[in-house]
Image 1 (cartoon, rainbow, N blue to C red):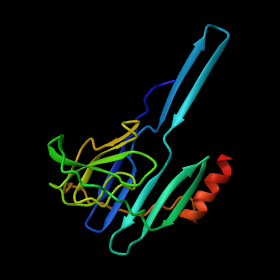
Image 2: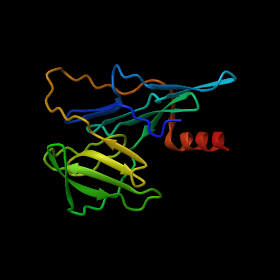
Image 3: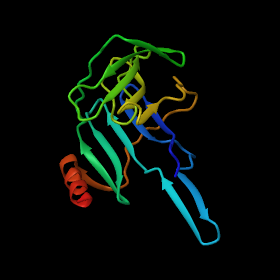
Image 4: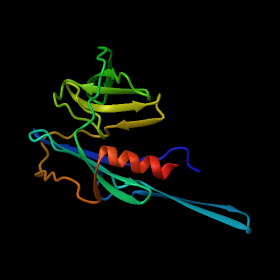
Length: 184
């Protein structure tokens, strides 16, 4: 079994809209086969779920598209308010000077690295609300890392940012109840 799985996502944004989703034309399956001589052969396929987040800063609309046990859900509501601690510690990521910001009051250890050079309060997944673009997020001491591979400001192509629309519409509370019930 592979020790590491990677997937490519894109963070697209304008002044009012933000979308974080799977990168287009990305192979979202990792497949491998292991053989034990001629007797047994095991083939495993690991697929990246089709998930996305959408936020309209002008209207406050927030939608998460999540996949759980093969079913798609659209979770509508408000983004989770995050409590960051600004430490002032600096690190360079690519060509940008970033500051680290640990997340306070959480059951997991999360540290975000944001750059004030791009004063946009967005980041990967639902991580946001810092005074600059989040270029990297480390969860549980690197157990999971979300990192910008490339930053392209003012792209040549026009961005069409639309809300995800695949799945059953539920509230955050309804989704949490479904997950709790199915994982039992």
